[in-house]
Image (cartoon, rainbow, N blue to C red):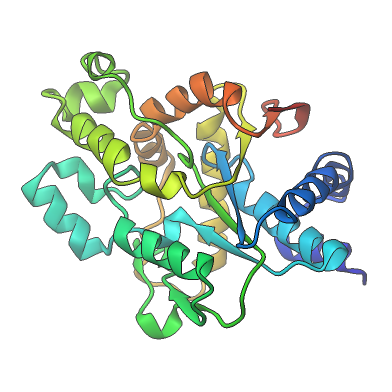
Length: 293
């Protein structure tokens, strides 16, 4: 079995994903390789896309292309791996706002650890350890299960649903945009906190990105279907080994994604004009168009 068939099997992808790789992502890997030649430090590549859009799959495919076809070492970070622990988020929910118990939005990550990890890799301070997060139990893995990078890398890939996002204007936060904000954030404390964290704590991280890629969904309505698929995969992965699973039912998923609606819609409206590589997708996640800056 060749490397790409192995990749498809491991990621549970249809054979048609090879067409996506050949048409869209193989040229991208070539472009990133060319851009790396002008740098004497690792190239940092960011991937933005709403939940379920295929960010982690793209990251893995790119890493394989860079390794096998361009002889470049790469590593992959998910911003999700840097979530605060459940206990830390409980404390946030008690001191700032109850909605901060839910992982995902700006303000629920250990940004200092993320910045430190990236800067170590950029300065080639090896080895580097970084956390892993278990979404099935909604908590961080113990430190002895953290990931370790033991060799210098040429390209750092960092993916996350709001990677590269900018904060909103204060006036844009006044009106709630969904029932979660209307009923559970009536005074706007939560959304103002999230916006301030995005403006302060995350922009330094995003400033380290050399090339930003966007997987652009057609609209936010797709997120519910895509996120539901993700949750089913998570349940199937952990049903035989987790008795304390915190996976969600359909009603919980529908409420959960409302935490991300504001920033996701802001990204859909603003990022396509500014990212280096934008892949527009249809509701079946098939790429229909590409444009680059």
